[in-house]
Every structure is written in C-alpha cells, then in structure tokens.
Length: 280
Image (tube, rainbow, N blue to C red; front, side, top):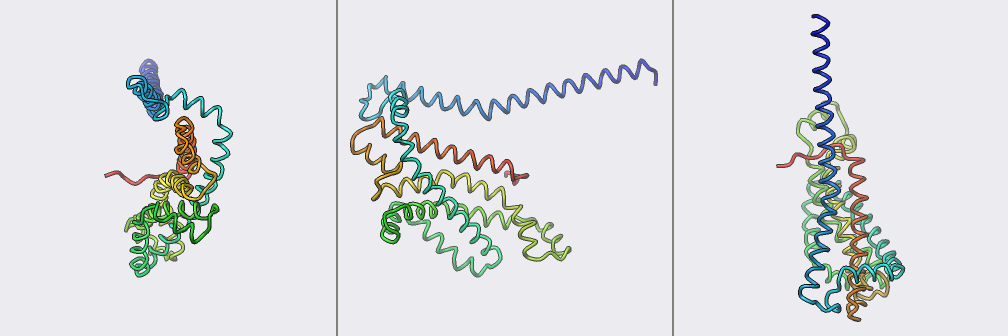
C-alpha cells in the first residue's frame, strides 16, 4: 500500500471518528434535554395554566390563590412549614424503612416456602384492601397518639407494593442461570445472594420509588386524626381557617419532600442496578 493511500485511509478514519464523536455529543445533549429540561418546561406550563385560570375566571383567593400568593406565603412562613415537615419526614422515613424491610423479608420467605406464601399472601392482600382512613383510627387506638401510628400507617402503605415487586423479582431468575448454579453445587444461600437478589434489584427499586411517595402520603394521612404537628395537621388547620395560601404552600412543601425522597432513591438505583428487565 502506497504512502498516499495510507494517508487517505487515515484521513477517512479520522473523519469517521469525528462524525461519530459529533453524533455522540448531539445524542448526549438531546438526552440531557429530555431528562432535565422537559420536566422544567412541564412545571412552568402547569404554573402558567394555573395563573391563567385564576385570572380568566376571577377565582376568589379563599378558594384558589394565585401562584404568586402561594410563593410569597411559602417564603414568609418557611420556618413554620419546615418545622411541621420534620415530624412528617421522620414518620415517612421510619415507615419506609420498616415497611420495605418487612416486605423484602416476607418475599424471601415466600420464595423459599410455597406453603407459607399460600397462607400469608391472602392475609397481606386483605390488609391492603382496607382503606387507609379506616386503618388510622385502629392504629391510634392500638399505638397511642404519638408518632408510632403514623409510622405504622406509612409502613403498611408501602409494604404490599414492595412485597409484590420483590416476589416477582426473586422469581425472575432464568432457568439457565438456576441450572448453572445447581451444576456448581451452590447452596440455597449462595443462589439467593448471588443470583436471586441481584436479579430482583430492578424490581425492588421500582417499588422503592413508589414507596418514597406513598410513605409520605401515609404519614400525612395519619396526621389528619389526632395530631397537632406535621404537614397533615397543618393542612387541616389551614383548611378550617380558610387560609388557602397556607394550604397550598403546605401541600407544596410536602410535594418537595416527596420529590427529594424520590430523587434519592433514583440516585441509589443508578448506583447499584446494572441491568433492567426487558420491556414487553
């Protein structure tokens, strides 16, 4: 091959590499736009529509305040909102941890014992079918009027979705992988830790992302009955006082906490999960 031909080939390869790099950069920018800017655009549009409805229909402030009024109230009463968020956050985190740990433990037992699954699973379904507002008075009678019933209701509300997803994840192991583990004479513990648990992680984190929001919801609902502090109690107080600005600001504070909680779980998922099940 002549020197001129080699130089031409190198030039062509360099051009192809430059094109590939430019395509990769463009694709990364597009993905960043879709991932970060689109949610921001959606939020801005929601606020604009909200403001336009208030202005166009002249909605009274005691029914629905404007976004500006809510933002001002959020800033002026941030200390009040944050002080009420702290107990709600503690209740949600406690319920999140307890409910998910119990769900993972139950799913592990189910996978290793079909008999126990047939006995316990219908009970879990029955408990999940009871409305949240019906569980709260019962738990208050059993556990008192402190943080315990709120933690319990948050744990109950996250338990069943995590149980269902975890059972599915632990059972999603391919027959080929199980056969390989048997050929290697792996024990049940080794099969669980090295195969089943790794396979179940995408399913588990899908449930945890849901639980991050529902745990907060459970804590807030628990505070609606017999509680003097917390986001739920502040919502009730603002409603009875027809303080719509404070009501919306309180809901916004709870939403911010749920979003932050969700993002933490999302970050943990990206750090620990290396594969995702195929979509059908």
